Image (cartoon, rainbow, N blue to C red; front, side, top):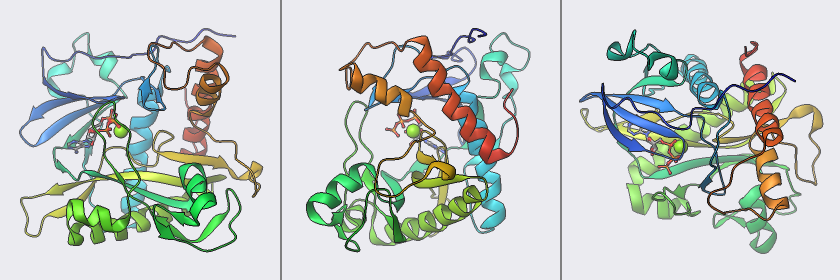
Length: 307
Ligand code: ATP
Ligand code: MG
């Protein structure tokens, strides 16, 4: 088997652009007052902890898949506004030795005021929603239909926001009312409507390509230069980091599903008692099988081959 190229787990473009923030996966740099360089590294987190080593190509897979979705979603929902500007190499990095590191994984985006909730849409019941439903018949405090089995589709997708936790903290599931208390009723209503519309457009597209999007998370920003402020889709969209992708061919209600995302990594962490621990490095077979899921999702959704 060919050996994997090295993962890029950190970037330093600060000689050219001011470094603004570091998330679990991304590094944000300032291009100018209204533009960010949004860089996805190959870092991977599971159970809110970042692993010591990365998944080669993961950053580029996430960036190019998001760009693909921004364009696909905009063509299906013409009123949609996203933060995407371009995948072009920012001017100061062109021709430098940092260009190959930035290539593919970087996106120029509009710098916006981030709405401080995670806008989750669930089409199928699984994960923390399934745990809650088994106990109380609710999902994020919302009463939903009775008699659902694990992994079953809801009659209608549900909007289940969560808080956007600071680094190292866990996001908490909240009710739509609590979301409205945080961001205001008007913004909450707009985000709910738009998130459901985006989810359904993505779900229908993915279904034609053999993938069930069980659930996903969107983030939004506000363009405060207009009145009222425009709600804009930011961050990443419909990637294996922000969604659960199930191969339709293996789907069966009443059990957990195979998922094209970090599942091999999560399984390995749990089996080895490493869930939530710091300072963990993945062995090569875990890196390889996790990468494989990301590549498969990318290829099925875009209809193209990854190198
Ligand atoms: P978080 O818990 O804050 O989401 P994360 O670990 O998921 O962190 P990353 O994906 O690594 O974060 O970093 C991306 C960060 O950039 C997120 O905090 C996200 O809210 C923010 N962000 C995304 N798009 C924009 C934008 N257009 N303008 C400003 N900030 C943005
Ligand atoms: Mg993120």
